[in-house]
Image (tube, rainbow, N blue to C red; front, side):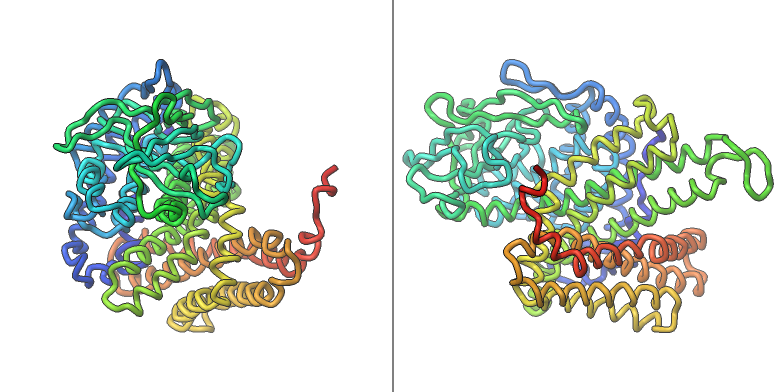
Length: 591
């Protein structure tokens, strides 16, 4: 496995050039986030990821985190690395200043987070969930809860979790058995949750569990759910830690990947009940939880980017050093990077990563703008755009990472199948991302049902109008533009087909949603590549920057639009031509 090299120049290109950081720095709330500061933070985050976190990736995969006697021991080096993470204030980048945060854009947090996930996704899951828990508390918690818990969560000395799933329920949250009983100024929580990432560990002083559960007398279904903050250790009025709460880890799961990340079965209230504090109002738990979930969905998409980037780096390094066969032009012995098919696989990996990264960062920038833009009109626009891009970010990027990491193994040939190279770990670690935080089928249903149909395609049409700006800028006679327009028009036709036929069958949305999401993902990815091509061309003509970097941007765009974007046609045909057979399927078809 090659040493990890943080792709600082790639991140800088996306934030500063492709998406234009000035639209954030012109906002008073982010006035301090100058391009110079952004570049400095990105540079240091990349160094920290490469020097401190990345060397632990293989160690964690081998050693695992394991539960014993109600405690979880993390692999060698994890405690020390996380202590440095805390000391450097990395989690506080985009957090509110009134609770100890630095108040920088969420987009900058995402830049650092990509590095953490490339370097060591299993470890990165801990601060990712903490950041989501902070979001939920900031948005919905009482001021008393914020003041008591946020400072230590923001400085990362206390971590956070998300407790939704129960063994009998899976993604169906309507019949949770965990219950909360009022008890004075707090609640007593009793029940068991599964798949709790970093639910117990030895890296922080306290663990703040965000738990979804109905009150004992709540009505059945999701409308009866409330959200609770349940600390591992109770917190005294002076902020010091008190006695251990009535909760414990039952076991940790044996998994195919992310072995260093403890996936816990958590038991709440085996005795008198775990003390919890309500976040938000009774019965509003699911809407409060979605603040955390939407954050997590963006970061899970980014996990896909991070692991795909690491897989590409390892494949490229191996291809440059592995001597095998002969160069088809010279007939001389060559490293395998000289073979056209290896070049195809590497460029497929690279161009996919570029597209995935752009989707993630465009969504994160809309996340910033929806809350901080100067006008209400801008905030409304980016709120809609953020909602539209979130399922694309999560699902499309995590579908592609499974393909990219598979190609990484393929480039290595037989050595890729051998664990000692480390590249199989990327493939195993990546697989969970398509399942996390609502499976990709759930994301696709969300895209069609809530994001396309609910506003009759208005938000979708606004995004298409953004694409038209790029088309007009490059000119309709440009070869790449002509290619792109063909697939963009097809996507719009598919969307109209869905709008026209959504009521034709109760199975319609579920039958077509995944294929539509994938079609839209490829068109969005190609749009960002088209913009990259335009920027690269302008930089080369002006003689600015690294000429090789910008030439390669143009090559990647050309490859993606001509070799990857054609997949969009098949996904679109599967919607418009295949909807009827999808609607006809039933359980009897699989007897």
